[in-house]
Length: 248
Ligand code: PTJ
Image 1 (cartoon, rainbow, N blue to C red):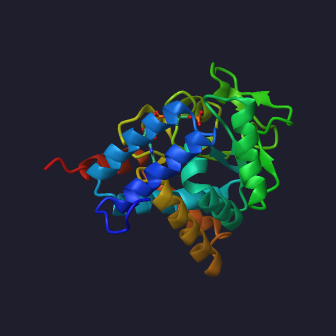
Image 2: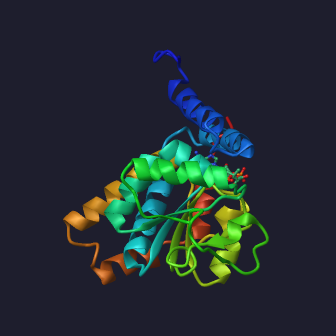
């Protein structure tokens, strides 16, 4: 039990989620290392969403609204930290959700599928029962792709991945939105839009932006959405994210 008065309460709470997910069998052991890496970068950006990340979130939401077949990809860490938030984002943006694991096992896929179904999200793609396709030029289990999901998706959200998939997906003509606290990572550099922020903060922010656009009737305003996308440069955004890292 973590006391609420602990100065690192929020951070310890996230650690607990990750530890419990590992104990429950759906988080990869390496997922705990990935989380530690993320913690370090989060600490360095001040554990808050920067203005730079907010810009990336707006561009990401605009890109999703412009898409024909947007897919939110989830792995063990994303499920552990932000399952409810991902479902809310999928609802707000009419996106599909697909399980994609680097350390894919039937058991992990089964648990994650069940967790989504328990929350009322029945059409979880990438499951054990589905006949999956494989993305070419990707030599890891992350190549698995649902036909109605990532195989045919034009826009994909890929939170918390290391660099073997984003690049290949971009080469396949997809627009890739990465969520990665490390602005220097291969995924961050290779993606179309990279949100340098913690998945627990930026996914709800994306939902908020999506609902705001909808309220103003801008979710279908192609000109408006395209102008947001046109004004965004991933390279520039990553430079600003790097500058936000304070070493003293
Ligand atoms: O569930 P699986 O089998 O697909 O497991 C995949 C992991 C997460 C183990 C795999 O993708 C991996 O090894 O990832 P990395 O390269 O260790 O971590 C991916 C990136 O996510 C790193 O650059 C981290 O800084 C970043 N990261 C970690 N935690 C967060 C994060 N980014 C945003 N929010 C976080 N909470």
